[in-house]
Length: 299
Image (tube, rainbow, N blue to C red; front, side, top):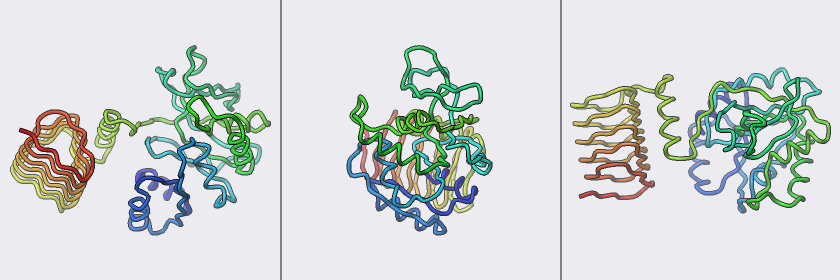
């Protein structure tokens, strides 16, 4: 989320509505501390009824053009496109051309690059432009009219109400929604995808050892990030390893692994692993996915 907030602040956004649920308090505390300049509002999605239901909760706070972003992905997108949108353009949907189009909702466009239709997980190669969950809506009134229409219609196959149906309503009502490309799109929704995204971030400049971190008798291979206050002793790190702030790692080997803040790892050999914040992992070997505030003991 912080990567996306940084981009929004750079764009000049100063008011954000956060749709929250689980860990609401953690998110509120983090935003207040790390982004005090943001005018933040919080709405709780009590029922997980889909993306249209989620965005509908923000309606009381929206009285101008609006960006809609989902924070389980990162992207390389030109958000400055919103500065040059004409009154005749209702919005922008960013998309990425993919080969495995059957996994996604894909967008069909006209000759001018405007959305004609969104098709969920097509069986035929009608388009390879995947909908990535990044939207700008200039016509915010029509957006919420479309959301009301979607919520009043039967839900989708999964029992949820989709924002894509709202965009289809807008287009069918005569709106012009521009489809814009993104240079990169990085998923964070699954462990293996999160590790791939972490590797990308380390490659493009997020690697390095903080001045306040302690490294003693360590060997580093490839791209590695060690954050503020972390202590790493007698270890082999990398490639593709992030050790977050305040974590301690001793007498261990970490490869393709993310270690959460204030975690404690001892005498372990981990690969392709996620270690949650404030967790303990001692004497473990292999691939692990460890939740926050937990204890995992090996042999």
